[in-house]
Length: 150
Image (cartoon, rainbow, N blue to C red; front, side):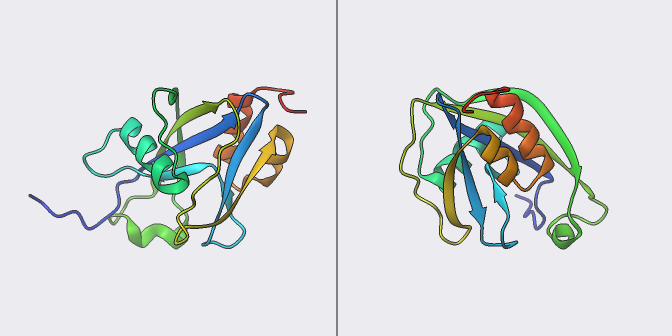
């Protein structure tokens, strides 16, 4: 079997939210101050849905059961220069698959301390303000809709 030394330039973004319109955001350790939904790269032999389930469990301790929804949206964005060495030479763009996980209410998040420093549950406007990436803000807005949690 061929050993893959570079990351696959494909990832998932999972918006976790409650029916009251609260959105879960995680603060990354690196880069400092970077807030995001559940995200992560696909393994070389993984489907987007498999990666979304794995990332949810790794980053929050949550097993999504049957509630995970594929939003059937794909984002493309340039890979930040700080991360270029993780990808094969010439790879400059990442493909991001968007998922959503609706919950009845909040749950106690179990963070991976190597990756994230803290988490917050925020109503829509607060989540939109705190999320660091454009694709995350768009995913949150489309998932919870206008006026939810205001």
